[in-house]
Image (cartoon, rainbow, N blue to C red; front, side, top):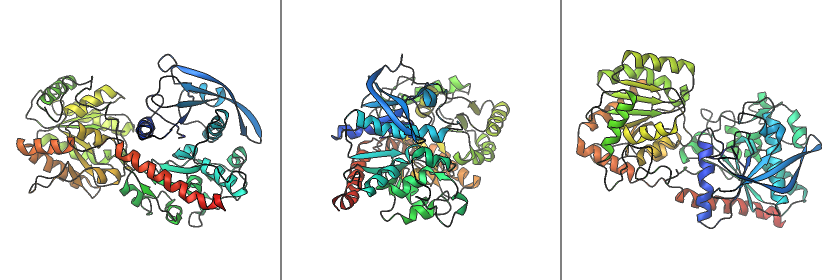
Length: 482
């Protein structure tokens, strides 16, 4: 696997969570999985000891050879190689956001392939995550087509979020050793013709493409969600597979979570009430077990549904509910939420920061978890919330539609409250159904139990990935045999 993020070493979101967990689940099924990650300067060797390999990397860049290094994290759950360069990674404080990001990830991707060669390990499949390694399928396809590497590995590309594509100028073709005109951009989007799109090349040349939920796999084939790559995605004869993410059920375990005031489980949910009381005290909200407490842990951006939240806040206050929001993002949302907390200190609590322990306490202490996303490829928050007995309120998009079953008051079936139209009225309608159901303790406990009973582990996803790897190998074999 080639990825730009991997928890707990370097990550900004869901991509890192996936790469930090999926390899272990695959290894438990017998696969020899190894991961390559850039050796960012932010990886602290005092926290994560690193052994340095004697293998020197010679990485082809810009028609010349640049020197790289390969290290290995000593105590990881799977072999984790760090592709190093003082210029591109070690001397940078952030993961992304630099003018030479294109060159940085060309170096990383080539360096990862060279590391496998230097370590004398031949993978059957190279699994690329997002745009950062999107040129790898292009390189391997070109080598295979030339006959130089007919027995080379199959390639799989996972799209975690289609919005991030890796657009760069044509000079990247030279840096990457790719010929001009090798990839004709789709005629329906001529604006992209003079640019190099890493993700588009990955989609075009990978032996198999997948994304992180079945609904998102269908959505990105449409102009509304396709981010100007829908035509290219529809051209893929094998289609786009959706595999829903799992979560790390060891880290996210309410029975053992050290950040909670009281641990609890499906067998004994009674201690959970202590977590709600502790959370209310921590956030300065009135401590009241009968007041519904709504939680939200999110990037504070419009596409996460924050533009729907502001119109809903007065109605939550009117209903007597409490709201706890944790996250950072758009300063406009910072200001709106901070003002709401000042105006309604008994109802609204805001923490504008990155605080994983507090996030755990919100999952384990609030009653409902809000995810009104405009689009959500998979989403992990709703999976964690259900595991912690927290009832999600979600919009029916992407992985939210695939993982949360709308509560039916007649049959008492479901795991949350789902709305469809991206509109504050529909959003509050779903919340209002939740507030009404909360008034009936037996129905609410049944709803919590159904969410906690859902299997959100990586086991099923890992088996689906093994099937995907087999299909990628099968699709490659006729060309290899010929």
